Amino acid sequence: MTFAYTFTSTHQDLIDSYEAYRAARTRIRGWLRATLIAFAFLWLLGAVMALAAGSDVEAWWEPVVWLGIPLGILYYFLVKPRVAKRHILRSNPPVQEVGLTFTDSGLDVLVAGVLRYQRSWSEFAQVIDAAKGIVMIFTDGSAHWVPNRIFKDSQERVALAEYVMARIPGADARAA
Image (cartoon, rainbow, N blue to C red):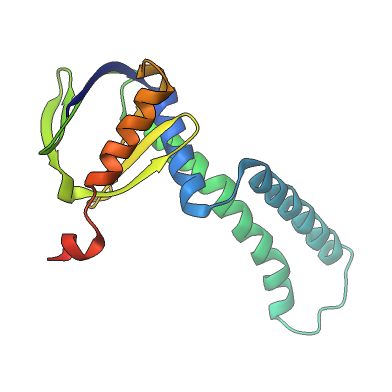
């Protein structure tokens, strides 16, 4: 069986792919991330106000903890993703013509005017079936995004996802 798609990839596709990967990796929904960020801001504000008001500090590490934990949460859930998105936008053209062909030997990728290469099924590490598309992650850390808009209907999307997932080797087969 062969699946072939040609579409115009945009910056929004790349951001959607990153968001789907991040949601799958952290397993935290968007509303929960927003709540964590809000609580971290409140915690940080409270800690700064307490320290500015001259609260007694019994040990040197107390202000470090009270400031470090919310700053760590804000970095991980707010700053780091924004930096990654900015990098994605700067390092990729706004639109690219992409061709993906899934065959029994693997995935053939054609980025118009840039490159063409083939990925064997042994290089597939994970498939994330997200709300806006399918993310395919490879053993070298790179990924490909297949947006929902390229499918004729939901059955074609499900068929491709099942086809790809059925061909991904287990960790044991990849290590051999």
